[in-house]
Length: 138
Image (cartoon, rainbow, N blue to C red):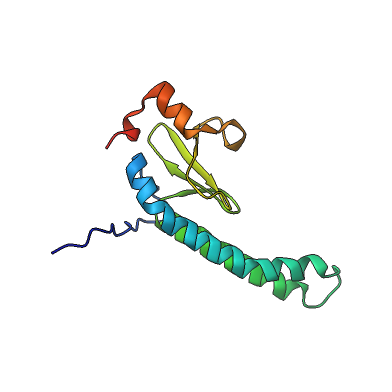
């Protein structure tokens, strides 16, 4: 007997997958949890880095810690098939654009085409009502 919960598909890092809305919504809690954990791990390192003067001999070590945490998060997002566009900003490719999410948003609620970028993102509900895209249907 199989479980009702979906098992996230792991993909090669250089091979983003194409998601339907249902697939993206099913994976979103995992993406958010991984991101929130990484954010909380990075926050004390970020604060320490901001408080340091550039000549501090520990600066290089703290920068390395920062980089390790961010790279680990990026790697996890890419293995889940997402496209990372910036720190805590991950997109689900739909085949004609992106379902766009940035931590700490509580839900997957925005979309933008391939060429619009974050600044051109629109409310997901409005895009679905206007365009009725294939990826929005089960």
